Amino acid sequence: MTLSRREVLDLLRPDGIRLSKALGQNFVVDPNT
Image (cartoon, rainbow, N blue to C red; front, side, top):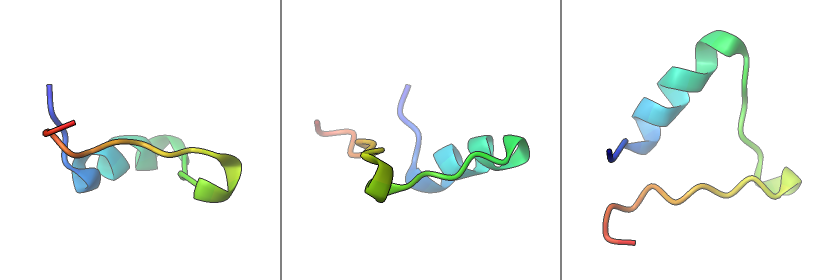
């Protein structure tokens, strides 16, 4: 299953989850990886 960056953010938003690179939260959203 491949989700776009926007789709991932839309799934997390209702639960109040926000991603932060400063916390080491790096997510690969490129389907070629």
